[in-house]
Every structure is written in structure tokens, then in C-alpha cells.
Length: 270
Ligand code: ZN
Image (tube, rainbow, N blue to C red; front, side):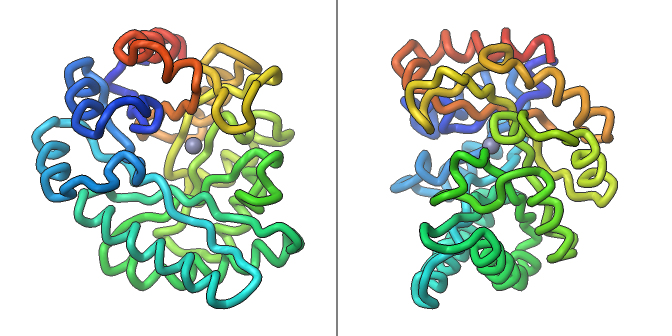
């Protein structure tokens, strides 16, 4: 696909400021941007909003909310408060969606975690409704199920979204996290048929990774699942931008303009 069909997550180019991301993505003809809260920490959000509006980039999502689980009510309340702040940030920045990494607490069962996640998302819905911001549940690879997300497959994400049954609650599918899932195509179709396939992220899983979070691959590297899953997503009717979200100490050490060239080249075959 062409660059104008891509959106890039600012954390993909971690060495760049938000202003460098906006300028360089727009200059290269990238279609959109997903903004990480880390990238705009300490920034004047109204100024960032203006730069985003002026850039012509499509504003896709704020990344990320979530982390709803906790052993006591005070911890869970604090998690909800953080998400309320994220909703306010998304509103100021004009971003129509927040990606949720839902959380998991060591010592709790998957079911306990999922119940707390459901309650946390439900608590946010009135505020999400008043700002019209969509909440996209992103299932994470099960290697993160201990402390990052009890939502560990597209099936889990679909079940959770279905149980909440709200037009603002959907799913963000990331190839890195669900490439391994059997029956994935049926889960993608289930998600899209219900109007819940909100986002599609590309990034490859490298079985020989040297860091559990920060050694991810470009489309075509590692297990090379991006093209396969992009076809499924397209066949299911998804017509949003394809988001590139790659955390990589290896690529962050390179010249970021050259990394952007590699991203564009690697996505050309999707
Ligand atoms: Zn993602």
C-alpha cells in the first residue's frame, strides 16, 4: 500500500519529538498519525492540536489508556482516573479513539482481571459518550498476560467488547499480538460484522527477539504475518488506515528518516 494509506504511531519513531513526527510524516505523504501520550508529555496540547490540524494528517488514535486491574478498589479507581485524563487529552488533541492496553495483575485469575477490565471500561463510557471518543480494546500477545493484559487474543477481545455491547467499544487488532491465533480469520469477521473492528496495527513478531517489548520487526520480518492478516482485515471490510507500530531499540538507534524509508518500503507489499 501507498504511504497515504498508512498511519504511524509516534512511539515508532521514539527519538523524534511530536513536532518532528508531524513534520516528517506529512512531508513523506503518510496518511495519518496515532499519538502516544509519552510523546506529548509536557507539551502544549493546544499547540500540538494546531500543528496536527495544519499538517493534513488524519488523526487516528491516542495511545494508550487501560490498565484497569488492581487488587484493591483504590488502585482500580486510580487506573480509571488516569483513563479519564487520557480521554480529556484525546479531546484536546482531536483524536477520535483511545487504544486500551487493558491490564493484568499478578496473583489474580484471568477471569478476575477480565471482570475488572469490564468494570473499568464501563465506568469510562459516560465520559466517552459526551466526547464521542471510541475505545479500542487491543488484545496483547499471551506472553504479556501476567502483568500487561488479560485480553490475550482476538477471541478474548471480541467476547469482552460483545459483553459491553456499546457502539463506542471495539477492538484494535495488532499483527504482533495475534498472528499466532488459530481461527483468527473467523474472529476478524466476527469483529467486523459487529462494527467493532476499529483499528489495524502492523508489526512483526520475531521469535529470536532480544527484548520482550523492544525488539519488534518491520512487516516481512520475523514470522511475516502482516500481509496475510492485512488480506483478512481487508476482506472483512476494514477501510481505515493501516497503523505502523514498532518498538525497536535496533531501529531507534538508526537515522529515523532512513527508518521511515524502511517502513514505507516494507508496507508497499501489504
Ligand atoms: Zn498495537
